[in-house]
Length: 122
Image (tube, rainbow, N blue to C red; front, side, top):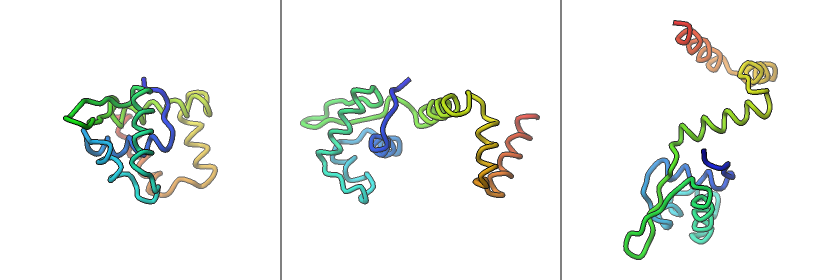
C-alpha cells in the first residue's frame, strides 16, 4: 500500500496514470496549467512520490523517466476504504445515507446505485 499522497502529488499521479513513462519536463507540460507550477516544483513533487514509493524512475540518457508503481484503481480503492473507515466505521451504508440526507445524490446517481445493487443481487 502506498503512503497517502497530497492533492498536489495527486495531480502529478493523474498525469502519469494517463501516460507513462514521462520525463519531468513532460509531466510539467501536462499538469493543469492553472496550477502555474514550474518544472522545479514538478521535480520536487516527483521526488516526494518516489520517497512514498508511488512512482519509480529509470535513467534515459541525461534524464529520468517516471512511472506509477500503483494503478489508479488500486489507489482509489485504498483511499475509499480509508475514508469509510475514518468517517463511517468502515461501512458504506452510512456514507450513502449521509450523501442522500444532504441531497447530494442526483437522480442519475440513484439510478446507477439501483442498477449496481440489481447486478450485485443477481
